[in-house]
Length: 462
Image 1 (cartoon, rainbow, N blue to C red):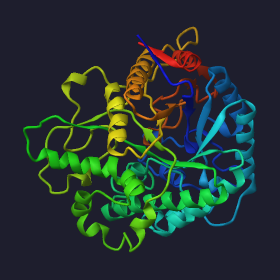
Image 2 (image 1 turned 45 degrees about the horizontal axis):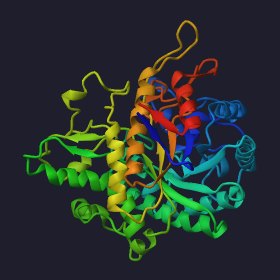
Image 3 (image 1 turned 135 degrees about the vertical axis):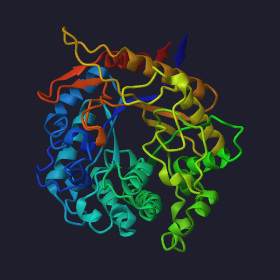
Image 4 (image 1 turned 90 degrees about the vertical axis):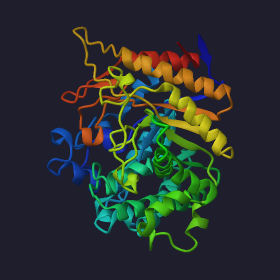
């Protein structure tokens, strides 16, 4: 069975600066919170850091040539804020601007559309020293940074993503502490959730002030919370809080100038002094698309006795929270990082977005992929069949969703390269291109060759 995609559908791959660039102390780049976090004992598996990563800073021409070989039409990458403004202030580092100019120009010359993410988690450490995303001033600093990028690159960049996965920025970074900056402070997490929404709205305006024709959006990580025990009356409230905390907070702010009322009530005094008069009017802004990162559904089985279950929500998109567990039906069907494979969830999610926010006229799947840790065989080939199966299944469901009216315009496979997987270090491989971290040799995996066929034929075959 074949699933054809619209003729103008955009196929691409995605990466993030700290995960691939390396060159951490090169050409004036400042220290980021991930430099600090990764060098803090016990925070990252095996003590891995992004100092070298995939050495993309030096090898980007080779990586662009690989993209050409795959036939991808677009490349989503992120700009490292401390490479342009080492201390997060107004002092520029021109060598950083020069690097991204070279990268953008090389992509365009190769016939690949560049799509920029302005923030993929590498906050300048100097801003974190002042409170980071829990400090309201960071939102305004981000808007200034966004304006500078739009002025420098906006003649060639048409599509801008402000912040990648603000839930992870806020809750993994400031409440659960498993991501940089590694804090465990509920009040700081709520503040960060508000300030990232505010930063997006301010940056949207600053980008469009510099480049009126720019298309701007935000990328949110989303999941479907599946109620595994509908007979438990208290579970519906838990599911609503989790859904509000992850799925509705930022979209509601952008589209309606509102946060979920039940969540604000649950947060209670945590929001005092954070949401200021006039903020909700600022939050609502005009965006051209919504970026969605989807990996798997989550399953909620029991209600925790505490009155604020969201406060121990953990590493999404997986149910490793205290009140969730992966159902037994997924035994033996997990990816190598332990996440269930739920391709139907992608269809359900984009249809839900279309139903709940019909004013969103363009959805871009900005990340979708899986951790499969296959290594090259004796012939140097990486036969990652499970990743091929994952891609085919998700794209089949996505095609069905489009046929049912979901306005999905683009799909970016995560990831172009095996890379630094945050707190997992180099232990998990998400790439369609294998990277030998010792030699930096790149090898297109079987999934990469499959993705080339998908792009060339504009469809996926079951």
